[in-house]
Image (cartoon, rainbow, N blue to C red; front, side, top):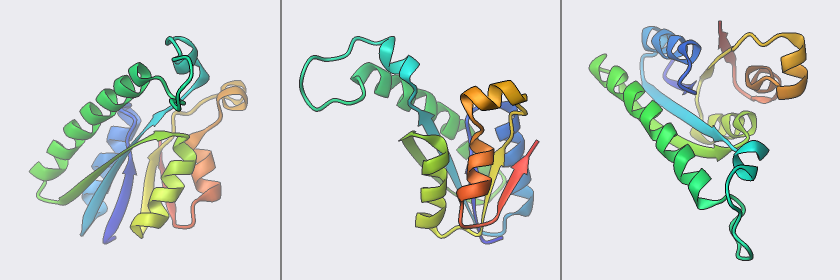
Length: 144
């Protein structure tokens, strides 16, 4: 595979996806972290009165810092393996943004981890990997 998008959330499963991608890839690895914006993040932070800020700056900064740390560790691993790597940091709905980035970057494949949520958790929290499998226009490999 020439161009692979690896979705990283800092979990052990996403790191396994990264390891698998390093074994399969022959070209560019695109590392993507999407900072999920949840109602909980927003309601636990003081919302500014007025203005155009949809996401409070504190929440945005925290999500970006966390995402950058995850991407930096992964980038070091890929660079040491001698592969070409590019990183991407987004904030929003992970499933939507993964599918959009896959199309925008023109990747051959997307690797995403599965957290193995049970039926009740999936019903309330959703499954990013399930969303990506059903909505992405390129092949998706789910790592367990």
